[in-house]
Image 1 (cartoon, rainbow, N blue to C red):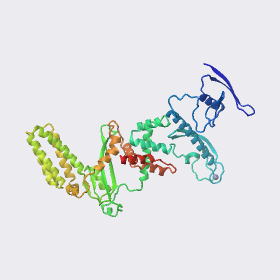
Image 2: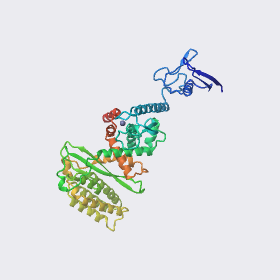
Image 3: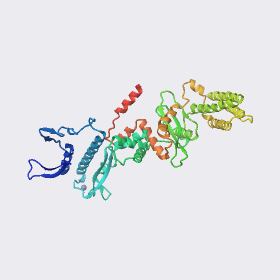
Image 4: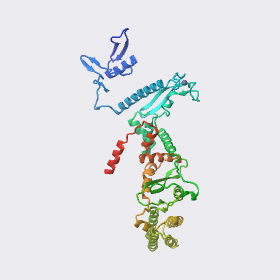
Length: 478
Ligand SMILES: [Zn+2]
């Protein structure tokens, strides 16, 4: 390899400022430019140009980023890698410059304008979407006239109370509401120069922090209504009737690997029609929650859940027909009567027919391999109806009057909020706290409330939502 010994000097400056260096012969002009920056201790802040044999090379145009002697290959414009590098460097420059200005303008005591005595520098690691910036942060002793009680304090503290940028937290929370923590981290690293130590755990921790913050924003607003039943009547009435549906779903537990725990979600919307009742699937915990939340509303057992249970019983009946046609037909008839009666709110008749089913199936002469299971299901159905008999209306009548009888809108919410993010991947396990925080973040993302939270917390932060609106419009149009 050929090497050149080069002497460089600055023109028009006296005494002469010069550098002697040895450079490899195959160096590109782009590299040579950087070598010059380094040997002179410059920051690449000016436009520049090489003038060789009457031809100009270099970045002499504003916004230019490449040399014309580079081989571009098949790639026009910036590569992702280059853009990440650029953004990172730019971010460093900007943040460091801002920190410098901030420190200078806050160096003096705000009351008496005397400079506050320095305790020395330490450094802050500030995490952003465009990399982590290490910022020198000046600690000072508070001035005598200050009311501060701490011995020293950091000047940048009031500018950067958190060591992470709001936008990074916003994007992490939003993305992790839709996909796993690890995937969020990987995709972020694909497109942005976030730090290489970024991982799923950091995304999870940040999301938890945001969800906690969201929750504390709700503080002061009543979540549950407690107190004496005779005081409930005095509670303020909501402006408009609302329909509320509540449902439970199961996710796998992190602490007890073999167990699941239940997450409960609800959806409510304002009604334009007369008041609607609470609908529930009749599970004790979900029903209790509804009573606690709104004791004074009519509660109705969700028809959807009832009919699902009948569907299961009918499957067993079909199996029975296969092995014992006579008994099977009898059971099928009785099941359909039981369903018909309960549809009309006649709990007693319905239970009678279920009992008949049980008797028929419980005979010794029946040879059906799922006999025991069928009997257990019939028993459970009876208990379910007995436990919820106070919540069983005349569904047929309600239906004719166009009143809500099934909370299928809640089922779909359950699927949207919980199943899509938490249940699909069966290997994924959750702590109850982790599940709670994720669902907080996910609901606010799905409801479109997340940007609003961030803009409230961080005045000056503007989150661009145009593309989301666009997507919603085109989704509706499709
Ligand atoms: Zn002072």
